Image 1 (cartoon, rainbow, N blue to C red):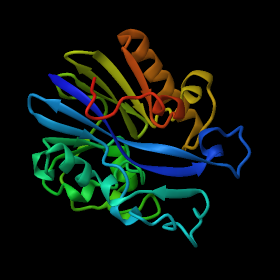
Image 2 (image 1 turned 30 degrees about the horizontal axis):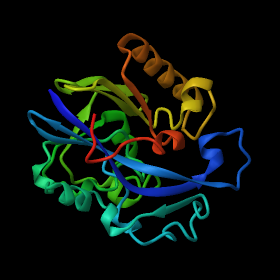
Image 3 (image 1 turned 90 degrees about the vertical axis):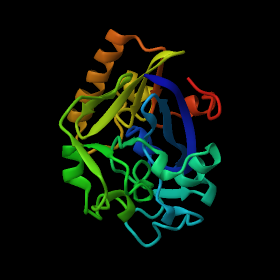
Amino acid sequence: MINKLYWLPIGQLDIDRSSLNHHAQPGELVRLQIWSYLLETDHGPILIDTGMPDSFIDNPNYFKSTPFEGRFIPHMSADDSIVAVLDRIGYQPDDIYAIVISHMHMDHAGGNPHFPNTPIYVQHTEADAAIGNLEYAPPECVQADLNYRLLQGDHELVPGLQLFYTSGHQSALVTTKESGPVMLTIDVAYTQENYANDVPFDGFNREQARQSIARIQQIVQEVKPNLLFFGHDPEQVAVQPVYPQYK
């Protein structure tokens, strides 16, 4: 059973607005909140995503002189490292029962190397595309020698945590004792307008993205979660309670 679900803010990332909405003109940067989610369960604490790599700390020019210069600007302090965030809560890396990685992009898997002993659950198709591939993400995100547990589709990791396969990514349905079901779309939909209005956003395959959103919409219709939380929606960020408040 999931006892508590916490939102952990772990840095920010400037990206071009056109990445969120392909109808927008390129050239305007928007700042996204980066999240990890901490679940306190009867089995022990579980993390969903580990944020950005430590190489981003105090290094907004990480992408200078690369094809991504001016498109991605990380804003991360030492306090935003996932291990620093957990330390303030009272956990050390080996205390974590399991980690779920939604996908292995720079803002979701960067803290993985801090957990060499913890099982890291990721979809098999995503691991095949990403692990060891330095064109996919920074080295920390795609490090090979970790305790990966590869999933083939939907999976219930513990009672109350259902993972849904969505074309490489995975979304999470978290059902807590107090708040009932909460759907975390993560990057299946960055924003409400991606999800509800079919606004195109960055991805490898537009049609697969549509199919993934349609699948989550069907699950939402069936489950009727008390909260539908998108990966990087600025309006939700403005009102979302964070640790120590919980769902």
